[in-house]
Amino acid sequence: NIMKIDIVSVFPEYFEVLNLSLLGKAQEKGLVEVTAHNLRDWTHDVHHSVDDTPVGGGAGMVMKPEVWSECLDELLHLEPTTVTCDSTADADDTASADTAEPAESATEIAANADTVPATDRPVLIFPNPSAPLFTQQDATELSHANHLLFGCGRYEGYDARIPQYYRAQGVDVREYSIGDYVLNGGEVAVSVMLEAITRLLPGFMGNAASIVEESYTGENALLEHRQYTKPADWRGIKVPDVLLSGDHAKVDRFRRDEALAKTNELRPDLIEALDCSKLDKADRKT
Ligand code: 6GU
Image (cartoon, rainbow, N blue to C red; front, side, top):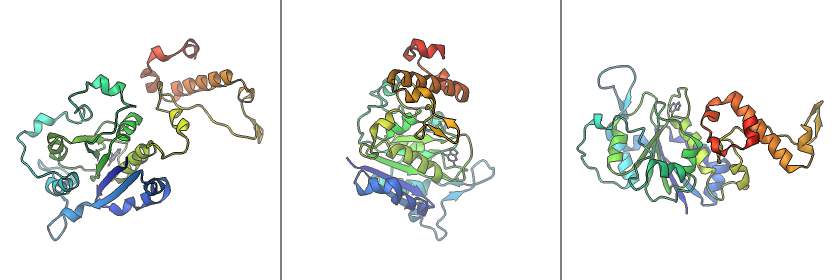
């Protein structure tokens, strides 16, 4: 079941590197098909302009809805239509981005996040520094989709009616930020999301167990314990004795304690979010 990925950008060359590396291999194996498109190909004016000044005033430029819609209609095989709704009605749309499926409640979606089946509905994703954070759970969910379409905007933004319109057309529209810092355009953010999503595709990585043990995944999202390889003594620094003991239960306990202590120190927010019922007695002591 091949995953189709379209990327729209004014710098499509940026994505040429995707043909190298691991994603290039995945394309050769027929797991994914990635196509980068130039947004300017859908312009009609001599200057190939894709943005305009903000309505209401202010600095910067905003990406025009007409160019985006011609492009997205073609890639999503949709006919242009007119929708009847005002822009204020959709003001909190980013928050409800992943709850668009009426059949499933929000809790059901959360519970099934790791097992949602492949969906025939295309997912349209806009990188946006003012949107909710992209998480491992989003990556897992999106790795089950058949068709992803990424629209890279510049950082000043794109006309808010673009996601609103495609949501009204029944498209699963998502907007995500990759962190609390500002990038010039969505290209780097899309590369980050793409890598997080595609490495989860079945057959992409050799070792499936290494995915299960990672930080931010599994029952309890903790930071990972430290790793060591041989030699046991290197430049005077010794590997912890317990790891050489051959006692698997002791090793597991040691690693779990370290993961808990490290997460508590570096990411107390992840400890807060833990499901306490999943902690065992020994966990509580740490
Ligand atoms: Cl998704 N886009 C841009 N332009 N800047 C960002 C971002 C996205 N996430 C964090 N910073």
